[in-house]
Length: 216
Image (cartoon, rainbow, N blue to C red; front, side, top):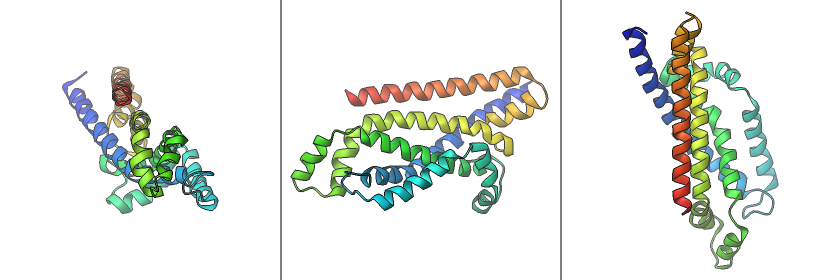
């Protein structure tokens, strides 16, 4: 590979990490409260509310069911409105964030469902409010599972970032497409794929280790 390609790959790694980091942060800012809402309003929970749970759950399920490539295309006007452009690393963060929010919400809901009902009952018997129970009992108890789910979500966003190259997004996905696919440079294609796989594995293993230490 030429020095130009090597530099492009280095830049692609940085762009991929930037997209993954910021999209994951924004997705959790929006997805965590939605996941808590889905959990708390479910049947038999501390803020049980069937209409709210149904509507929010329906929206989340619809968003989750959309293939990410289709979502990328559908969000081009919105992305252009938010960032002033529909291509590039910064623009790719918008669809990555929106695509990850429903995944984060369901993952958070699943993690909170693992909390023992006995802990909630004990907190309620002491007169704690629902919000207090969520913040001081449920979330701390679910932290290991939330961290494990967080690693999975970040790895998912990383995988999505590779697809952003289809609509002109930056990162390793764009390099794989431009050089590996369009120009038939198989060494570039396999290099970018290998780097993406390694990055996903590192994130997942890191999340597993942190989760296990938190459980202990």
